[in-house]
Amino acid sequence: MIIRTLKEAQASERKVVTDGWDSVRMLLRDDGMGFSFHITTMYAGKELRMHYKHHYEAVFVLSGEGMIEDLDAGETHQLKPGVLYVLNKHDRHVVRPKTDIVTACVFNPPVTGQEVHDASGAYPPAPVGEAA
Image: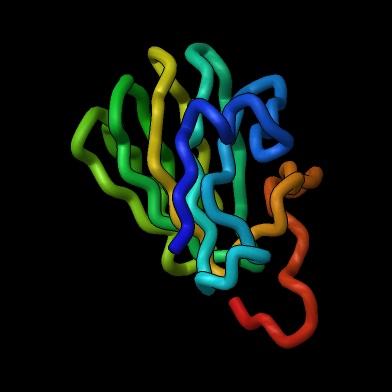
């Protein structure tokens, strides 16, 4: 059994901070669950362009408001508490938080812990033997 608190994880190397977001990685690849679980805050007023070419992600909005734009479909959707969005086709997208948006996120394959987006908005591919 794994027991962790958000407070403990926030005070550790499990918290990754960038200019536009911070992510507390509660579960990582080394935990052996086959997915990673994060509490991520996207900062108000930022424009976050992402394209997870090597990962699938499910995101549940806990608090805050903003918009997400699906760049391939040309569709925009409102983000607010209770909304789930799933990047099931490695969707290119932009999140525009109106307020800080706090989310619970699941990644498959799991991340290792210190990943940040590259120039294309992706995380690096999973190590050999782990399929996306």
